Length: 536
Image 1: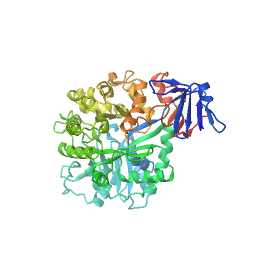
Image 2: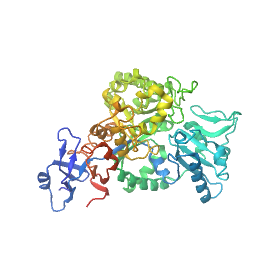
Image 3: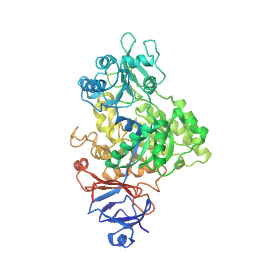
Image 4: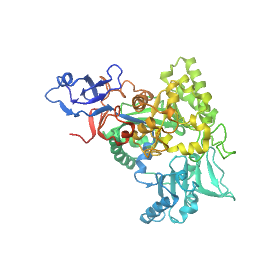
């Protein structure tokens, strides 16, 4: 019995054996046949639902290979500071929330970046004290690697001039050594963030259900999550209720990896909806707060080479043990020194794996971001079989900062074509809520290397890094599927694959690149069920 048939479509299957088709048939959650309208229509039974795509384009569902899903869900209920154009606008929004919030309760927000402000100066606690003196305030930066807090928040956390910087983090200080209210990197941020009352898993699950609807409308059918165990608890609630409608690969951040080892968890544990990925480690910081770890100092900052969040020896110990326990690793590395050190770690662990007879495909290690790589390291991801998990939208968001702080080195940054040509598998994502979880924005960035407003010009920023649409779509479909160990289930519209697909109002393969941003998602199907549908 065929449950559903989709006819009269322009289907891009991403299957080299059958690149295009006009129809497909679905039984339960999977595709059972792909072909012409006449052939597929003949498979219909009395209870088969037939959907007419009316000539519209169909592609596999898209996966965001790097997202902070609990952070996305929480951001729907916090002060929205995403790329506000000035510090004054940020303060106005905080003041508005303070008027609605009982004194003493926390105000939480995220998304600010001083790089887009007129003076590009970091904000201070005193700025927040002026508009919210009676509320502790915690505002995460867009990068996720800095936080802006007020004096009451510092007092709640017991942070004073005598408080030492935590390992892997820092407090920005004034001339007298007093913290200014800017916290750099997670070890410093956590000292304040842990005092913010945590929502219950039920609350987070409710927020995720709202975010999930937005994800379907954006064209997402899956995601790879990088948040903490609270996110997994909420995802399990949705799964138990049958409400989880995205296919989630859940990574395990290194503070909790010992618990995973004690439980004997291995990569792939779970099902087609929710499964364990691998160990997540932070090697360094980010470009925005200039904490990415560099081989040479930042331009104009001769004493600044960034911050080491996890040293090389510790990374090796963590990755080696995880590999022996059946878990790949995925390591955040943005600066060229961080990328170099991570590659050294992976090279050593690959040698251990080879000695044990473990094939490379059994440990699908990744580097997250790979934002700047030294020319001498350019081919090492491909040579070692390391997945390049990259976010095209970062290139267009960050190019001005990259030019300013990395100078001539920027030509080696955000270069996904370089990794592709060196043989690395690309897995694209957004890093939301750092950027919007809108994969078509990422497609546009990868194809044009331009912002939606056209900057920096018609050819894009370092245009030699541009990709074509087909390669980009594979990086949002088949790349993440491979990284999750699900390449036989996801990323292709072919018999035996899960019926995760999108219906678009125009064909990405034939339209001019400038029309990508105008493309509408008319239908999102996950597991043979329409989760989002705007066509009859």
